Image (cartoon, rainbow, N blue to C red; front, top):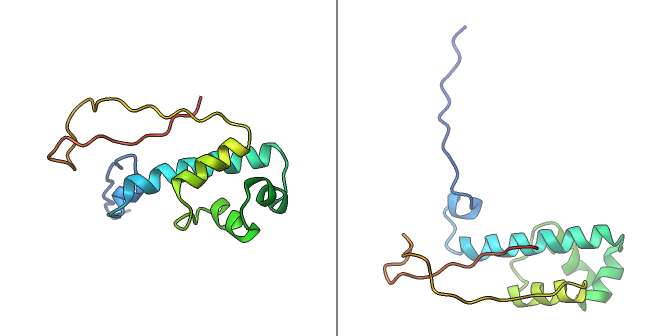
Length: 115
């Protein structure tokens, strides 16, 4: 039996970068924030309407965010949502460890870590 050869390519860890999106780093951060917001809403057994009231957002926008459509929602608003859901937010700014491939000037990176 001849089976066709399938090329397998390792991902970078950022699906948005793998798809060639210009704002890949921002989209990955937003995806992680949206995922955590969704997890907390589910854990607290909130309806979308209850979540919308708590998050001070229209219910349709909450629905979009929970479905991964978060382009119209800023990172700042997502951090505010996490605070409204009872999470402390710490922002740490530190020197970059090394130069990145994407920035000749040695730009840093943005990451999200949940404790």
